[in-house]
Image (cartoon, protein in one colour):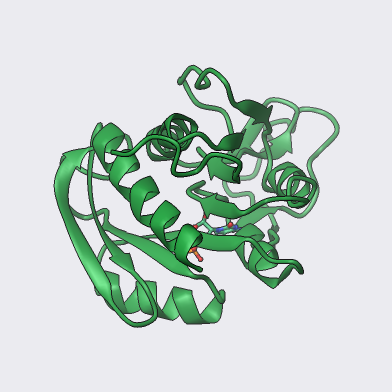
Length: 220
Ligand code: C5P
């Protein structure tokens, strides 16, 4: 790994889950650990980049020498992402953003009632990586696709629909990789080609992915 490939470049990475408040004590979230995003941030720092890591709640220590922005909700992640775009060269969306949030968060804790069912109305969250890819001037924009089937075709669909430069696809139906695990295996999908990276640690994968993205950034 040649050091300094990203020196002078600004890289913004989203990582981890978001929490969508139901009331002051409850939320909707997911099992994202943030490990892949933090590994990418670490690798980008080692490659000499100025890194902003916008993270939902995780159990991980923020990498040293990064600008760490801690958020809870998708809306907060969206706001932080939008205000990080000036001078951004490379944006990597590895966060598992909640697609929907409660239409309104109750101001007080919701009390149990005599009813056996209750429902919460959900409204769609903004798609952060789509908004970044549509911004002008636009950073090189990279998304993730976690799927359980037809991984590559869904990744290609995401590449076109969200107008991304690269999609990193992983099959979350395989045990031992993906969500929460220390290892991952991915296929990197570009408009005109793809490359499979077999199972390895997220730290190693982070370095290999950053190397490829840096090469592309430097040759564009
Ligand atoms: O549409 P889907 O959630 O499958 O796309 C996944 C990609 O889009 C990931 O890169 C994820 O970080 C990003 N995303 C986002 N904002 C959302 C939903 C997904 O940035 N609201």
